[in-house]
Image (cartoon, rainbow, N blue to C red; front, side, top):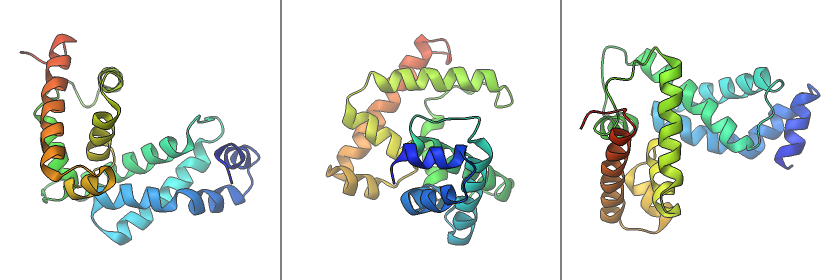
Length: 187
């Protein structure tokens, strides 16, 4: 079933919307959840929470890209679960490693409690990514949105792991300079 038909099921409050979503995007949402939570049962619960959040959000939302809409919900819910579960301890999974990598190029002055600042920073990062080559943008999104490991990105793109690491390092450096120029970071 195509995305428009699934969204229409949500708009009509048809229970089939959830089963069609699960069939088409269940593995995708599970992969994002698993990359962040690193626990199958927590990830499965997160995917179910994703379906519930989608049900609650559509309507009024009418997403243009259902996969991105669901991926963002799954990611945000998983991050919240991760933070709650690991508030006092830090484990070395791919999610925490990718957060550490990004922390080197993102501003520490943005107040996490201030949603407006976070949205502006998100738009700035999106603008930056739109200016990058498609393969660079994909690698960056695989790593920092999907929280894929270097090995997984290598398998998806066909590039060697050293090239992936190099592309990520150069992209983070460029992002840092871009954010400095935009006034988000101090030089």
